[in-house]
Image (cartoon, rainbow over all chains, first blue to last red):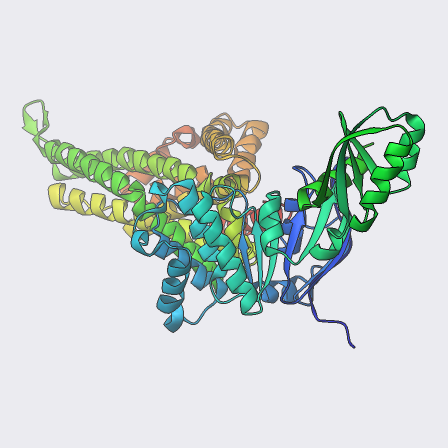
Length: 308
Length: 285
């Protein structure tokens, strides 16, 4: 079977600002049509990566291909940007224009056929729920409405790739739900979505692949199901001496949370054996809570490993 | 051409944000006031006798130069205020991110800004000057020798200072760039006077200082070209007889701007615009 086509590929992509490394050797590939979550704590290099992919900043090392256009070939990359939609994290549109006018300016910038502008703009307004305020000046919009408009701008011209940088940071729960629906609809028509977010539950709900970045490096990448395959059990136990900890370690990775001990990566059918072993060593077990790992658990444990 | 999308946005912003409207209203008020002033010139008496037609026109020509100097100054200030936050403002508030992620090159973005601003400068300078000249003609029947050449020089002066402010805007915040552009404008003006003093006292060093400032920022040279286009021949002849001392007067020009200087200005604008594009290429929004 041949490899699936890639929407984004990066090889050791790096960016330094003087002595500060914003992104250190990012290597990843995103198949066409995937909904890809790009996760990391603040300052991990997520926005820098997006800016590099869009040609807004120039890499200091490595290379990347976006819709097959290499960053180093400016003309090819520029042509590719016709098929890319982008919602920046911190942005403002011309506050003296109406939402409809902002969308029309972007139709013009993309180079869409003028005859289709009205329909394109109407669609975008409909999808993001701004139809009724379309002719109001953007200056009077709330943050959430501005973010909706930003999403509408990113969807213009049926792009093949949409990069969303924290698309729900200013939205209420209804707005967040709407954005998830938009992302699912995009995925339904084969659009690749690159979702840059630190809202883990959101990523968990819509993304099938994720990369976790920290300090400008990818520390884990893969399908979400593989990333979360490890189960864990939380046990409240007393009276277990240090030798007991060694015993627990043979069942999985340990994390102490006060009186609770979390054993990660243990399969559920071994939990009764684990409890019996603890009791045999003199441990007093008060509670046993098996749990399926969430993205947040995985995220925190990965970041924890990165900062001993 | 996506540069024109940007240019149209600049013009639309000027119109929407009531900048043009404010300038237009103020300009019309000033034109009204100065028109009234011009209409009073023929009523001046000299030892009981009314002024001759020649005297009226001579006074009108001087008054017109002063009025137009004010207009050119307002034009320079307005051009700086509008141009200096054009790029830096959009980078700071994130508007540039949404625009530059589109299939548009940095040269088109900066070039589009320049075209839009140039249109605003030309419309304001051309419109205000044409109305003022028309009013003066209607009130005292005076038309300066080269009205079109005058308008062209004033527009060029506006374009030069606007292009400089746009270059500064690629790197500096609107306020810092605006202040620097205005200070340089002032230095160029003083430089023109200093050069004139050098000529008057036949001091080569001081003359060179004047010439150098005129070349670094050619606004004062253009203003002299504009003044020359407003001066009646008799005034130029009288000024020439006064010798090189008159060169120090910022409201007087004894010689027309040489063709070489006009070509130099075109090259200067092209170079500074090129520098702006080059500077913005390396800027990361």
